[in-house]
Image 1 (tube, rainbow, N blue to C red):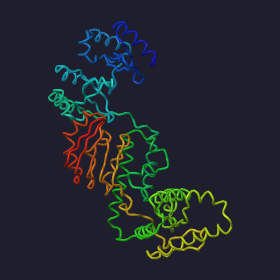
Image 2: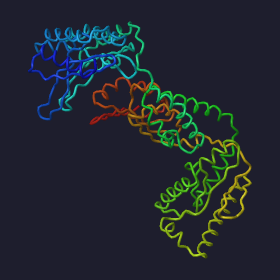
Image 3: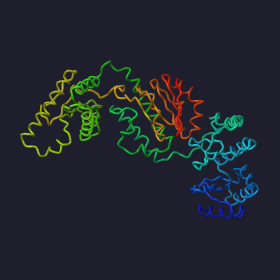
Image 4: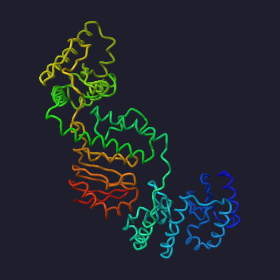
Length: 493
């Protein structure tokens, strides 16, 4: 039996049992074959629809108290029996757990006057709660009371509904079930992308151009955006974090001054003298020139005079990682008007440009020599400068990870695992959730922490637990803000 056929039969039985007056909807899927009858709740002004699930082909009745209030309980029980006959089969293991947890939840909550709602969570656990109805948004809100993780996660919320005792009881009973998370298999196509994404991120990390919070924006490949499974996203981040942590330990064994430090110092001198000087700038020569132009334009807008540029790109850095000499590109950075005239230059003007570019090269060579290098250069403005002696490219991450503020969107919360490796981070904003929670993060530098939630109720409830967690995980913290749409509260620590 296919979905559409099952859906049609369910609708016929529901109409036969419940009558024609109710607004009904039917949902069904094929693997495993299962269908539900829902009672639609329709906003008369907007036509928006929400629904209450009444019964399914597994033979259970849901929303029993509501059905009783509507005078539908006996009909709902009859409907559940009829639906089970439509698709007779033993419940799958996952469905057995769902029905068992639903039964426990109904036993605990119905005597207190609440219909129990059971939902599968992204982490493969079952959650028990109740529904409240937001008439403004015209939707049911799931209010969490307990999960099969053996905890009652939001006792403040349960207390607000007068259900603290029930939540504690449910948490204890669910914990005693010995439940193991049940999730669908990892998507094979996404899992196949993980090694390549990890390698690409680590490669960007080794180029040492972008800070950690921007590494995933610099991949130049779509694979990371095509990994949607949170387990696989987390696997990527855990492997990247392991590499970053190992690098931090390795750096402790480095000499006080390494070649990259001397090159960094030389570039700083050149910047002070009006140069754009960038390491691992873009992936190609043309990309390096684009980066140079953008930086030059920004500095010109601030009133600076730009003398020229010097840079090497990521292909150069990759070669230097193998111990080959770095090759530096350099030259003049014209404004757009001069670039437009370039093909119209006379022979004399072109010669003057070449001489000016060569003068830029001489300055660069002089500064490099002052910092302990013996650069090789022909003196021709069309040839690159070869940095000698050759050395294996590596750069201290403290030179790169200079981010001071970081705001992470809800869809990127897994990247928060990188926060402990940003030594200059002072202000951090993110959305805690199942994928990554506050209890997993730490930072010795963050002073201002903002936690974002979808609903005001969630933000208010979070205040009862997150302050202590934040103090423990962020020892330098001075203020904690919880925020939701239309609500914000800050606690000074």
